[in-house]
Image (cartoon, rainbow, N blue to C red; front, side):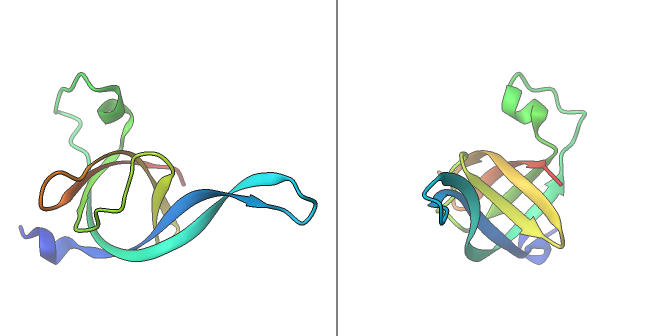
Length: 101
C-alpha cells in the first residue's frame, strides 16, 4: 500500500483569537491552507503508554511541516480531525488525530 496513493486534500485550520464588532475576543477557526494527507483509522490492538495516543482515533501523515499539536485541525467532507500530537522531524509529519465531529 502506497502512502502517496492514499493522500487526499484536507483543509488545515488554525484556532485564532479574533475581535468581534463589540470588542470582545473569541476563538475562531480560520482556514490556513489546503494540504494533502493520508489519514488511517488507529489500530486498537497496539498497546501504548502515551495518553495522547490512547485518546486519538486516527493517525495521519503529510508533507506539511507547518502543523503544531495545539490549535490545528483537518477538515474533509464534514469530518473534523483535531490534531492532538504532531512529529515533524522526519520526511513526513506524523499526526495523531481525534475525530471531533
